[in-house]
Length: 199
Image (tube, rainbow, N blue to C red):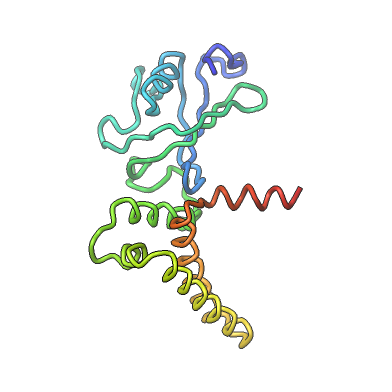
């Protein structure tokens, strides 16, 4: 993908609108603009760089705050006049200290965030973490916990206790995510399988 591939006749100022989406949670984080130089720098360095219209210069997101956006994937839209970048944020994206510049619910996409936290625990194995203890005990213990939480979820469903069902179902999903991490399976793998079945 090259900057010259984009159709910028509609924009009038030669700047490419760029939507930033969290690669993990899929939450839309912000909108910025790129000129050719910002685009090339982003591709070259793997960190999102914009052209700041107010400052009149290139601006790498995070150059002051340290909250960089690391590029994972880039997609042009169907008219080749907008760019979508899936990125991993190093911290809050908005200058207000919020996750995103859009005031959508903070818990949006949290299951993906939780999966990312679990993967981090698995990689670092911090002492005192319940998740670490599960990984230390291994797949049999984790699988047993999934079975126990599944049974408790079913009991609450049969009893018709909605609040308790939500509580137990959340325990089940957490332990299932731990088991998926242990097995090297990500949410995207499950999505691919479900999408194949849907077709």
